[in-house]
Length: 577
Image (cartoon, rainbow, N blue to C red; front, top):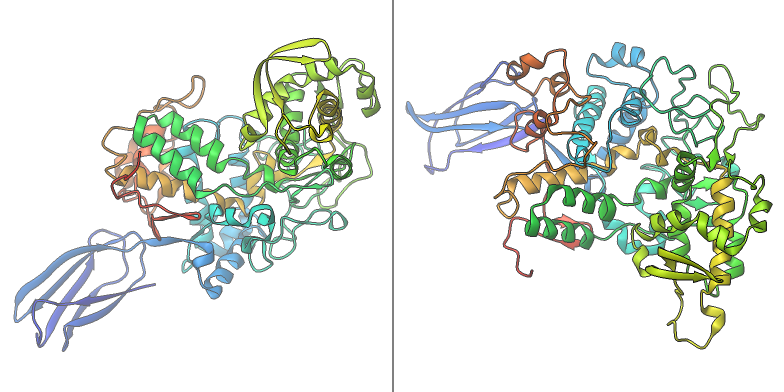
């Protein structure tokens, strides 16, 4: 419920004031026809995104004739009071605890079970990341999520997480309030607890679809859960970790300055595609990777770091560690790693099954065990990893440690146009050779990486398209919708049209999406989209529907001036270029 205080200001002692408040359309259950003896009326509105006609008369003379719209306010989760935080978390827990049939029976047709949302993001048909569809798909997906959670409790405070606020925590990013028991539970989970989160989501399960009949367009793990073919974990439960093969990642959250830099870039070039690249690589960045973790590895990264930390920077090591499961995916695509298409599991996915061997392993000629990696020459190991170092070297914050070389000599073998980690503890001219990363030390890293990638073990669901299995997913992404609200409302950015200059082969502006106009009911005037009934909306239609002034957008944001640890007003004139 929203209480609005209405006051007549045109007179000091107005006497009796006649009020008339009515919805302007078909929706809206609040209607007032009242007379007050003062100039103030407290009116309670119950319908979000509904326009109301508000009129006030004194002695038969109309003195107020206005229209007002009530909207939900999306608020940064930590700014919400404890009572409303708990209310949000309990509704979210309920949403993840029941299936579609039970949910519809309890909460009505707007309820959508979490499994369906996981499958939608896990689709192999659409590209939710790495292109401009990121800007339309995630806001639309969030609408489906919020319709569902609001069907459970319509009085919720809708929440988002400005993860950039946690950049000040540095290496202690995993101590954020977000990971408390009263919110989403820890990311610093324990091996003895099978890397399961504690708190509200301890019992959240992976989506089990062993025959791919329920969700045929989604990705599946070899054990029949929604996820990726390279993900072979036997757990039926949500797993999350900040540990990678025994090494605790120190890579913290990005700072608000990254966001501001992206906005400045767009103000200069108005290149929508490059804005997406900046947001996804510099702001969204490692959000998924840093909550996935990796375990049951063929080598121990914690032991390796302790042995070599005199020359090995832990931030560089973190950058390398969190990307390993992604590199295994690249090796799998290129044929250097093989993964089973299916593995034995319990018939209904109700029990963890670690009794059978189910893992990816090397398909590289001559490498049948981790020990075989040691039999290769330094140059052979480097040759296998040139693409890997490029992937690592172009990732977030890697440019501090990894440099592009037109030519690099690995013990007599010349590699052209490669990315190579340089010494990270001291200046290259230092006379302390123990702290210089020479070819021998680089080769030690290469051995570790190859053994990890070719015989990877297991990793968490957040690394895959099935990331919404982790409820944390839903508070991560609204910050980017908030950014597009700024882009479309501020004259600093909206003076030119937004050109859908997407990557070739990815979603086109007039290409169908997996969303329909029904997803935006009851807020959207569906008569405008009757021609799409039973069909999917195009990106162009989605882009129109999610405009902040659209009738379909039932929410506003709490503010537009705080972006992480930076105070940045996107509606003011840019002072420094």
